Image (cartoon, rainbow, N blue to C red):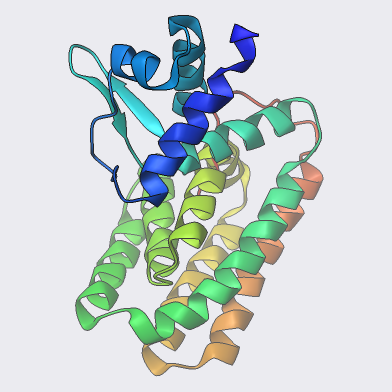
Length: 236
């Protein structure tokens, strides 16, 4: 029965959170305190802590204990990675999901991004034009991240960060192998995305995003044989 009692520990931690007795950054009760409070064995407590760590709920700090964190995206990234490995999803499906989310986030960002953030995106574009492919891919991700963060929606931010992390190696590979003309078109779509953010023209901004993801989708469709690595990540 003990190996099922870990659920009592998880339920107790959730109860503490819902009752505002535990907040992100707070230290969890010690194993001994949990054992005394819940009358469960140490094995069940450690199993519960392991599960919560894998879920991104807690973080173990050597010599300090376990702390409540907000890193659910970690679990999502690992889940998507596993789904890719067992071929339950593919890069085209991930690209399609990212398109849908970014189209929504773009409208939100249009109302939320400050002049300083817009200026930062301008600087990112300028740097992308003159840097190496590897560094350009990272700047590319930062550009899209700015739009996503501009949504002010924590769930959207977590989901997109997880998807980006899962596929970065694939996108870097695509950028390395694509033609100069396609690279120039991708740059044009970035410029247009930012331009229409400034002008608050959501229709034209959406057109630019769709052109961008049309290229990504085509690359995914052509590269079904790409060998997935657990260290991969997608960026734009």
